[in-house]
Image 1 (tube, helix red, strand yellow):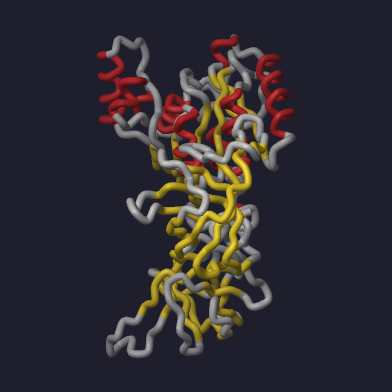
Image 2 (cartoon, rainbow, N blue to C red):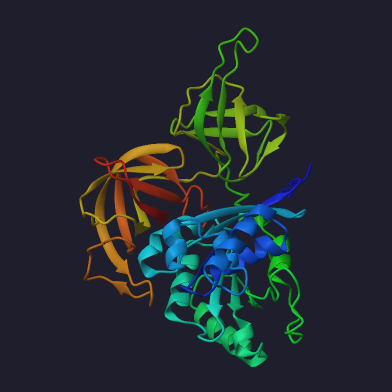
Length: 421
């Protein structure tokens, strides 16, 4: 059996980013409306709200701005998740805020995305905010970026304007670590090139945004080479029917596990063979990311939450010193020598900030070696020392085993999220 990541319907996660008033919420509203993914009563509700506010047309942005304060200010503050599906794919949208003071929200919304939609206003072109969002998308290793040049109706659907913006952004993006960039001219307000092809821009022969989202290849976004299975839970039913059952439940974080594979267990280093792989729907022959499965081994070995099943000739890094790019979420600054709880895959350990290397200027990518006060929304490179070794890969290699979060031990708040370098 070949690896077929395309199950009945594949799930694509995408995030939207852009400056305030670039029309992110309108674009998502348009996607939902034109792809027939909203209910009649939802449409009626926003129609009435639009009329109450004295707007001439139905304001589709109201579909996503869920918080009352967002509706009142007409901006997005928190990450709003929306789900919709077409016959080809299921989608999760993370609508992230455009303001600089919400960088952390963008990091949260984008960390699991396959595609980042970056909106620019056709009148203003590529601005500092656009560059910032592209830098964050490249830091978070989002595999595909689409630059949506919105409000084309306000520049008379002019081809030259679109080409200038495309050229401008391409030059900037060449400095970033981004492999796949597409450009689509749209008008979210009028629906040009969102779900339906625009009749106003016959010079554009590319696909609509919806076609792109339904067809972009995301099967290879997962790491299918390095086998990683962090154990989440040990299943021992203790019933007569399953008297000797001992299964290790968790989510495949990388690679393909097959029945009969020789595997190694971390941290013990013992080896065994996969006896069977169970799922909610019954036994399967092979498991790949991001499936949740239960693995049974032929030998009775001691494994618990936080341990990892791997292939013996392909080990992750095992170390107590971890170097990460951290995005700081908390008003209280990051403390050098500060102690935090670190969560990595299913493992929880305590750690100390050994060193703050530099702060990253998110607008220029300049490394600030002097200023080491890391406040809310700052991104910095730090070295953490953990109380016991963790099993990790670099974030570039595997986003699941290469990411961590930090928790303040006193308040239990999540204070930072990091990408292992």
